[in-house]
Length: 65
Image (cartoon, rainbow, N blue to C red):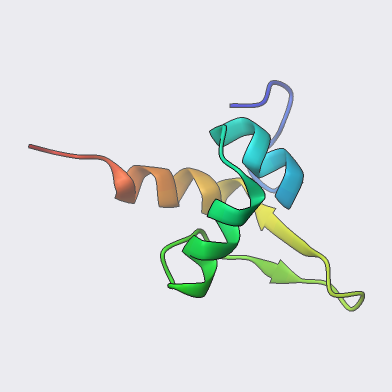
């Protein structure tokens, strides 16, 4: 996780991709398929991802096998 961030903080797509070490195209592919974390669309069209939503999404992705 990014240090110094609080649960209510919002990440940009670039910050999320950097943290997860994925390409932007992977993020948008997940989003198109409904497999990515919840996003907020700002009036200018930019996306933001709440830290809490990302953390919850990552927890849901855990393999409990």
